[in-house]
Amino acid sequence: MTATTDVKEVKTLALTDLYVAAFLLAKGHRLTRVDDSQPWKVEFHFSRLAKTDTDAFYGGGTIEGRVYAAALRDLKAILARKRREGDGT
Image (cartoon, rainbow, N blue to C red; front, side, top):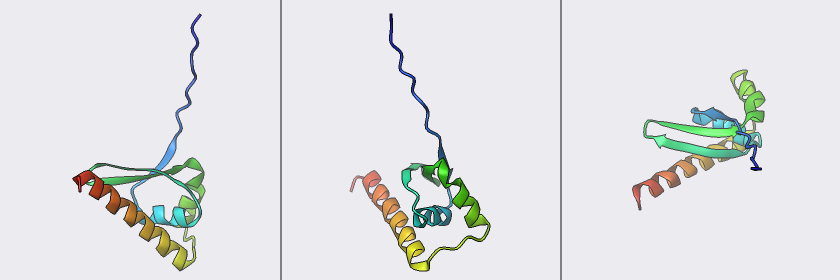
């Protein structure tokens, strides 16, 4: 008898728009990963639960400016760190 493990594939919400990703961070959603494997595109991955706030962003949703600016700064820092690590410096 063999045992099998049922592995669930966790689906994420992948976004390429830095400003939407910053909005989701500012709303309190957790960034699960950043995929920068392609030099011309970066994908920000969030839980599928962030879909509602993504729709809110496109519908004119608002957030406090300082919180949004901090989230944008955090994302840019993550990207800069990943680029430095990729360059071997």
